Length: 297
Image (cartoon, rainbow, N blue to C red):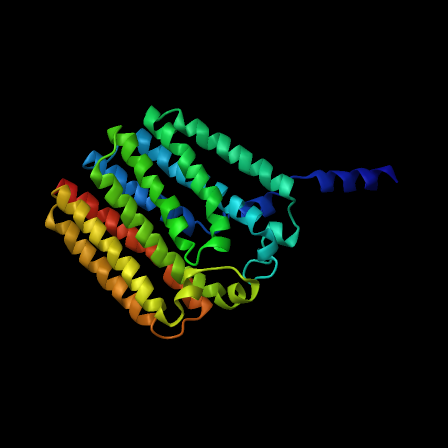
């Protein structure tokens, strides 16, 4: 009888790797790319070309670590809500597959890794980092307080551009804040599209979102956010005397945005909304390529 009991005990104490991977959204890294790309914009513009390899590697790793930490904070805060939403009820915390203690343990490890990465960067970046953690922790609760919680997400994602600029220049310029504002506006736009997936569940549960708040004006709100992003990026390009190739790329991105806004004038299904959201990764890549061309030509 002792062998089966020992086997059962070992199974119960095994590390739930699959659940932990799903907790940090390891199979879907769209959020990591959307966090990373604006920091890459800032690194390229601050360095006026390819940034130092060490800094580049640190921010790539940092984007993965902080996005992973952010989604754990989100799931810890929203555990009760997630159980009532079709799309999220199977998440490891909501379903009970993982305990809150396990989630907090992984979160702590990720934050320790993030702190370790900061040791290789200028002191100013370390001084700015608590703001990033604070914003990530506040975002999940903003869904209870404000009608457009996507604005808090935008500020949190935008702060990465401030840290990236500081890592290269060791001080902050107006261009850094323009990239911050552009990133915030962009996140409001694409995350509002993402929120379309949960409109009916959010209305029933009582969670606030820009998609729910805008209603029939969804396309106008998204269009305004994305247009604002382009204005801030254009201004940053003008201040840094970027080559016309950067503006050609922005024009292409603008046409892509216009096409999405046109689609939002009609009802959009959850799968369509998710596909539109994921397509923004390519818009971010295009802007990065435009910046590289604009500063090197």
